Amino acid sequence: MNIWNSAGYSIFLLLGTICSIGMVRAGVPLTDSPDGMTCYDYVNAYRLPWLQKGGDWLDAGGQIHGDVPYASAPLVVKQGRQQVRIDVTPLAQAWSKSSEPVGGLLLRMVPGTRSGLVDINSRESPDLSAHPILYVEWNDGQINSVRPAADTYLPCSTVASVGNRPYFQIGDGMSAILSFPLDVRPGVIVKSALLVLTTDKQYGGNTSKIGVYQPLLPWAQPTSLERGLASDFVLDRNIEADPSVIFVERFESWRWRSAWSDYDESGDAETVEERSDGGEPLDGKALKVTIRKGKTQGLNMHYRFAQSGGLEPEEVYFRYYLRFGESWDPVIEGGKLPGLAGTYGRAGWGGRKPDGRNGWSARGSFFTMPRQASPLSNFRGVGSYLYEVGMASAYGEILGWGLGPSGALEKNRWYSIEQQVRMNHPGKKDGVLRAWVDGKLVFEKTDVLYRTVLDLRIESVWMNVYHGGTQPAHKDMSLFIDNIVVARKYIGPMAGNHR
Image 1 (cartoon, rainbow, N blue to C red):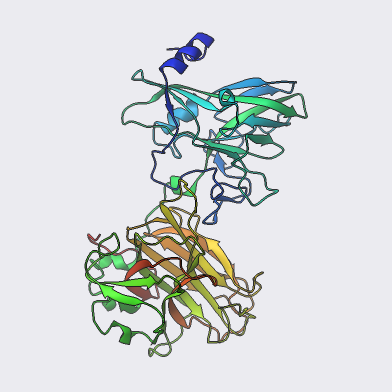
Image 2 (image 1 turned 135 degrees about the vertical axis):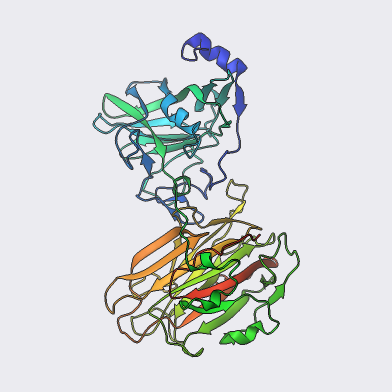
């Protein structure tokens, strides 16, 4: 069928399947909800940042932020409604070869053409006939007409999402992103694809050209698994034998607390080896940490290097396995997760700002989940919570893990979480903070100012699970921790079969 002529267009509407939900790829979805895309983040709720403000894309030549569109169409500035039809077959054929994100398009004015500003009716427009629509014909004869599951634009004049507006804008340096729920079937490729947009308002210039690009999302790009010293020890068995390993905790002994320098009794932690809160143990026993309803503390304990007979290191790697239980639904506030620190009881937590001589910390963090129904509702966000010299807030910096598979985690699944701290040379902004999820880099900051004096080092592994802020949990919430390893070298995920 030729879907480009008017007759074909009308037949297409009759035969096509109107799709409205779902995405094929199990990555973090594109969404125009308040928790979704903004100028600064591709997931606002979990602070997962774009590489550059205003969104990221690949052009037809595979160039990041390149100028060559997969497809384009002219737009004449005139009074009244006009329809814009763009043959997006080249990009759609890339989707059928599993180029991610499947169904994603980024629209921007093609550089070098006169760029005005155009309002395009979005899926929130009260005029249903003006909604964006994608027509796809497959080489097996199947025909679909697909409406977007998300469409928004990315103005940098606000940090909020504008995805609920009845229009999206292109021009004046602004891009728009649309996500169509498209089923990709093995062995079936796109024969042709047509994007139809409707605009009622155009501003400035005479003729512009709308270009179509592929949105660039970190989770959709190939990333390599970094194997570390743990790859030589199946299920971490005898990993203590590696000379780079400083400390190991598997929670198998009933005396597990004795291995730690201190333990705060106000928390709620116990070892379990049976199925609990929607999931299985990782390998033998695991530590179940619960934040009780009306409470804030789940776990607070330290492994202090000097107290344990060693030297305080300048660089260390800390890996643990984490599973959020079925009950883990933080809707009031986010909070803290385990990390590394050098607070020395003086600064680096609770509003005590570092001055370069008194302390620092780099704990993990968890984010508030979306309160309303959202494509992000199945994910729980994690990141870093950093106290460094010169931070703007007295209460630290919350940093999303936006690289690679990102810090958006699913409940009831075990993840390898690894963090690295390398102290800066005193007074120089060259300290390092990195994080990996399942052996893939998700965060990197190489300009951290932890200290201005040499005698601040890495004092401890801080095992902290804390709700808030200040607000207590609205219900009992549990997470699970296992197979902690601390080392002088990168550790990586453990080898062998495990849940």
